[in-house]
Length: 245
Image 1 (cartoon, rainbow, N blue to C red):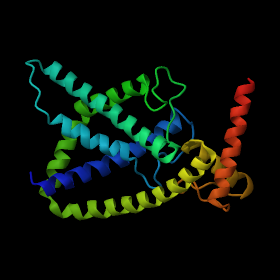
Image 2 (image 1 turned 135 degrees about the horizontal axis):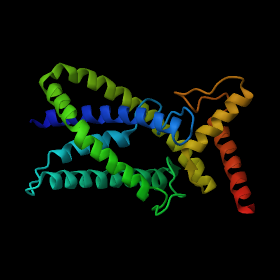
Image 3 (image 1 turned 45 degrees about the vertical axis):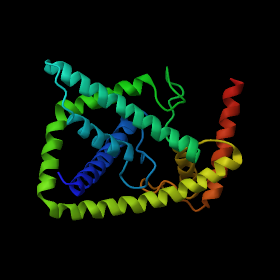
Image 4 (image 1 turned 180 degrees about the horizontal axis):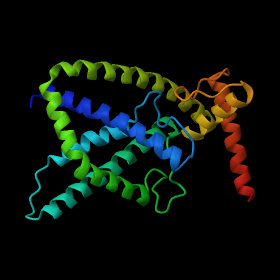
């Protein structure tokens, strides 16, 4: 496979994984965690890059030739490698946001055995289940999709368009993150991204007489700086309340 083909396949898998991961997170939050419809992740559109990198990486790992002489052991080793690498990606992504942007996209601080609230044994086990599902269920369909994609080069145009939309979204979100980072540095805090979304949503639905936007959770009549100040005040009040208990 040519280098350009490899890049196109990587972009294809990244976008497919990012969008499928977004759908998975929407339903997970609706029925298991938040119990409500939430636009998950850092971006405005239906992308969660963590899953995009994960799908591309798991596909690459599935191509590694492992021959122990036992098919079950080959499968087990590949699944373990995939699961461990997904945990590594999750840790790196969480660390980049917390240390570099002062933003906490998820928080496992209340989970047993967590490391800096970024990873924990429970979700590492869930990544192993995802890896197993990929190996036994998704591996062959993904391989067929990649084979079809490589043999239909004209489809790369659509991948380029979607990737362009993603990059525009990424630029917008990074601009937003820069404002959050500046505010967090001044207040010497780490902003919990989901809590910030909820704070904006509560204000919009309480004072602006309309439902908060699912696709644009920070869309408000107030300036974003005011929304950040309101979030910081609520977060401080909640911390004080927890200390009194």
